[in-house]
Amino acid sequence: MSTQDVIGGIDLTDDRYVVRQSLIRNKYAVEDGAGTTVLKGKQKLFKMKEDFPFTTPDGETKFRLKAKNVLDIAGSYALVDEQTGETFGVIEKEFTVFKHNYNIRSPEGDLWARIESESSLVMALKSLSDIAGLLPHSYSITGPDGQSIGTIEERFSIRDIYDVTIGDTGAAPREAIVAAACAIDALEGN
Image 1: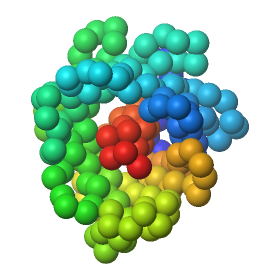
Image 2: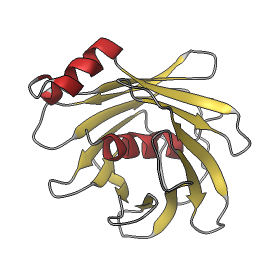
Image 3: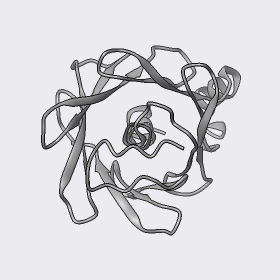
């Protein structure tokens, strides 16, 4: 299992996490398997470009997800280390009609992982029907060669709660995968 520590001071060595959205807005708490909050994220409101800081439980900003462009139909989001200002990964949203597809890439453009929602038919039903839209979302996470890295499974609840399972991520930093779980919920308006 890859346990590389890209951003110091964040322990993301577990293989299971729970991402909980606040009832009021796109604020997230990430808990490890023991129920301890290890990371928090909050989508900034009223910004021309997405800015999504991730902090320790006591509020120290460790990294940010920042949009590269104002319009993000098929957007690209840099993961930026708060201390160094260096980009350590990129999350790309693919433009699709019904599916939610994201690629996690190295700063140089190498594919590290792919996050893909359930089938187009299920996503079309969710988009077109208020009742089907209440059904939980699920995503598969695969590596560049198609091997399974993990899953993101939404629970049926009033607020968005996701169970994130991560195995061997290869070169993909766990920070990028956990940040993507929060960002996908916020960006897709799940």
